[in-house]
Length: 326
Image 1: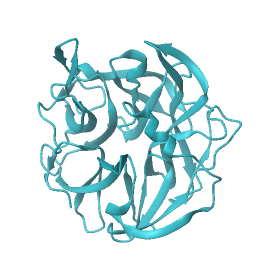
Image 2: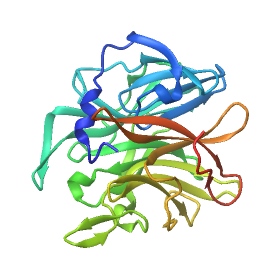
Image 3: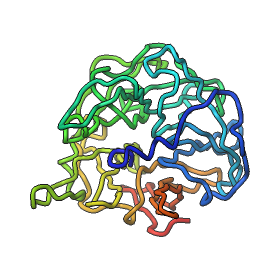
């Protein structure tokens, strides 16, 4: 994802909310350049809404042809994000009659640390709210959800067996060199967090990711793109992404307790083909179980990301992924 190729995100800036971007068009999914695609199948409007890194929105009736991009985020320049934040890994969630925008914001003007020569910018997962799936999404409640003195990213949403809402997010590997997967409780209306975050597992717990350090092969240090699901048997699972050397790759872990508290046990092998990652799961309006991911591609010397859909099945005890994208 963006961790190893941070310069890629300069392609995305955030213009004024509430306007169509110049060049709004209707195109096939494969013609869209988008990282970390997340699709909301909204039953109220019977329409699909797709967002991701960059903070743009695309709309579709059939998952094949998409219209966009649209601006949906109304930035508060007086907030910690500043007037023009980077937006990464945005997700849309419907909850208790409202729509919520979970995203990672980076204020490049604020530096919070330097670790091993890397300057750490102010970066955190935050929740925005709207009455409509296509926004506008605005800040509400607490000014910050996660500590200001450490970088966090890729926040996602889950309601656990205790009935409480949670954010699950990553602790940035650039700051700790062993990325974490963490959870924190949210207020009942998602307007802020309660207490402190708790580590669920660490990057170096992975049995499938790989990198070479000083002639040794060890698990990769990146945690990326968590997304939670419950199987037909009630088993709690999480898809998440890291690297196998220089190849973006996605795996899955399952909670032995059936809750976010774990312990989390990782499948030994990745679940998607190489070069696909940062996935999320949803059912389409025909009841099909699908996974959205992105792949990496070099075109004319430019490094781009393309969204894809895979058929999946989580109706039994584990997630099974068709290895051929739709």
